[in-house]
Image 1 (cartoon, rainbow, N blue to C red):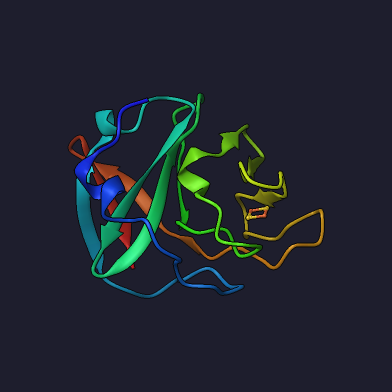
Image 2 (image 1 turned 45 degrees about the vertical axis):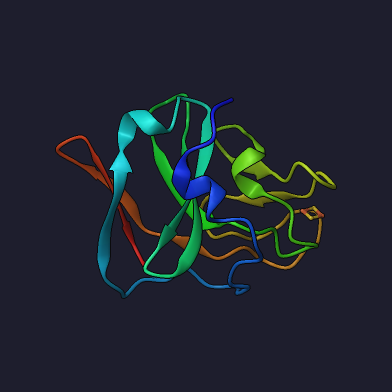
Length: 123
Ligand code: FES
C-alpha cells in the first residue's frame, strides 16, 4: 500500500464527534485515483485530518482520520458497503451516520463527492 504525502501529514488524532457535518466549505483533496477501490487514504483538509474511502461499488465516504475509540488510523481500516472496521480493535462504524454497532463512540462523517475526477470533501 502506498502512502501519499497527505497521509504522512495526517498522523495525529482527529476531531471527535457524533454528527455528520452538513455545512462547511468544499475542498479538493486530490484525484479519485489516489484512493484505490476498497481502500482509504488520509488527507489534511483545511487543517482537519480526514480519511477518504472509495468502496468497491464506486461510492465515496469521508470520516475523521483517527478512530474515536483510541485513535486508530481509520484510513487503513477494512471496508464493506455498510461499515468501516478500525484496524486496531475492530470496532465497526456505519457509513450512514458514523454510529458504532459495537458501542464505540460515533465517528464524524463528512460529505464527499467526485467532480471532474477530483475528490471534493466538505469540512
Ligand atoms: S482505536 Fe479504533 S477500535 Fe480501538
